Image (cartoon, rainbow, N blue to C red; front, side, top):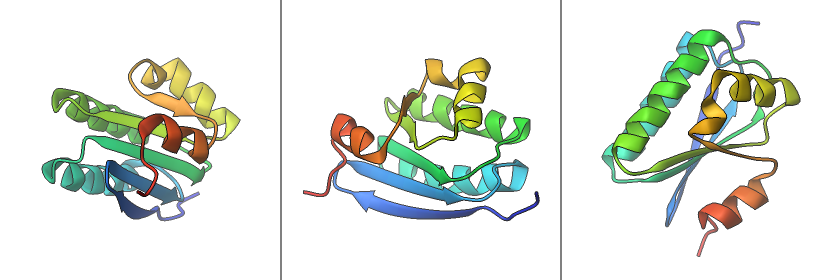
Length: 119
């Protein structure tokens, strides 16, 4: 369960996609936060987190994701998620993340809605 989280950032003209792989806990959450904050500091205002390769998020990881969402909202931007497992999707709904971040079933749906296709 202590699988190290890996984050791959793909910049797009209108934002960025963060692909995660592994466990989102305190260490994994901080890794996501570092990447997201770097993007925000570079004036990126649309970030999509693709969690297809993430199967577990603990409470500390969720609290870090909430902090990222709040910081992005303060900057007038938007955080979205896609490709969540059913358990993570339900957890995000229960914990309120779904109230402040859009959750998409697929990356294609997210890219279309967020206008993040490569142009």
